[in-house]
Length: 246
Image (cartoon, rainbow, N blue to C red):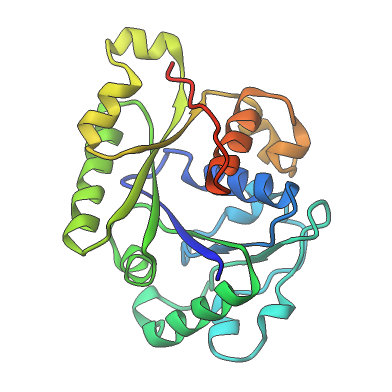
C-alpha cells in the first residue's frame, strides 16, 4: 500500500504548495509512482509549482464521483511516474462526500507509492476534509513567530483528533534571518512541539521556477532547495539523509 501524506500549514505564505511539488517531483525522479492531489478547493495552484499549468486538468471530484478513473489522471511530461489531480472549482468542500473521498484515497494507495494531498491553509472545511482522511502529515512552517504559532496550533488540533504522525518542515530558512530573530531551527521545533522532517533554505529559484512554468528540480536541479527536497524524499523512502540544522 502506498503512503498517503497530507501537506498542511497553519497559515498561507509558508510555501506549502512549493514543498508539496518539490517532494513529489524528487520522489518521481527516483522512480516512485506519485500522485499529487490539489485539495485547495477554489484556490488551486499546485499545477503551477509542478509545471503543469499549461496541460490538461482533471479534478479529484471527477474521480470520486466515478466520471473518470485514476488511470485518466494526467501524467507529467518530464516525470512519467507522476500523476496529478486538481481541485474542483465549482464545488465547496462542505459538499464533497467524505465517504466517497475516503474510498477514492483507498484506491490511490493501491496504484501509487506516494500520494500527496496539498491541503488548504488554515482550519476550514477543506482542511477538515483532508485531515479526516489522512494519518500522516507534513506541517510546513516558516521561521517567523506568527507561522510557528499557527503551526503549533494546527499540530495541537491534529493531536486532539488522534493523529499521531505529524512532522514539521521548516521552509524558507535563511541564516541571517535566524540570527536577526535570535532563534535556531531547534527553537522552532520546540515552539511547534513537533519532530523535524526537513529544512528547506530560502531560495529565489523556487519563485523563478514557478514564474517560468517549470518544476524546481528541472529548472535548477542543483540549487539549495532542490537538494533539500531530494534529501527529504530519500528519508521518506527510508534512507539515512542528514538534516543540516542551520
